[in-house]
Image (cartoon, rainbow, N blue to C red; front, side, top):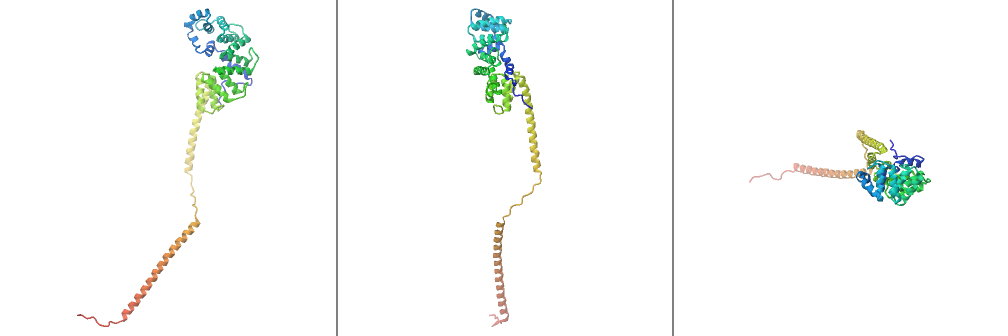
Length: 346
């Protein structure tokens, strides 16, 4: 069973495929784009209904921030009916005053043809103006333009420079795309370690595509030490966020875990059977090694002891015979010698 290596696998024509991969990021809603480029800007849409009248009054007095917020309301239809022409009007006013948020949003309108006729060249000019001022979303969009050759000559080297600048400013989409580029060797030498680095940075910020790809890297030990537990954690995060590929991969992870557990039990049973069969086998006792030299010495020692004991026995027997002979002689002399005087009583 094979885990899909990437949530959006790149084909041989990597740049055209990458365009499809990033289309969702590039065409993010104005509210999402604003939230990514300006801290706290996500609250703009949330409070649009209550603040719309106030922002409109402030925008009419020339307040750039309110002009951007008002344009967002018209663009997204929050707090007021959706009206692209009104959105373009307020984006342009704020962009002319140097707002990088408005410049990036107006560029997206030109690129996608929202409220104006499509004009990729004008979009690139606006993206570049905002990107050069440090807007990380505009830097990402400019990188996409170079990568896909929209409104500018295709240039992967230039695209990577802008991706890197945007990623350094912690824009997750750029971090994810850089991870893909290093993983597949798009415009750069393949480097799985750097791919994992950028995937992780994007994943930590909630990019579900990066979370899935990071999970696969941990699963396969690609650019990082193999760690199935960590792989499952990241894959689950991406699946919970709605990533379809992550859901597929997670199901494979669970099947692999179940099979591994089953195989582990099978191995334990096989080990037990093997041990039991070994214990039932007929065993032959090895004949101990005989120390012939030591045995000979021991025999000699025992023989000497036995000889000494025999000598003692024979000595005792000899002494006994000699004693018997003396007794016999004495006895004989007593029998043949008469008493010189009889016994008398007083």
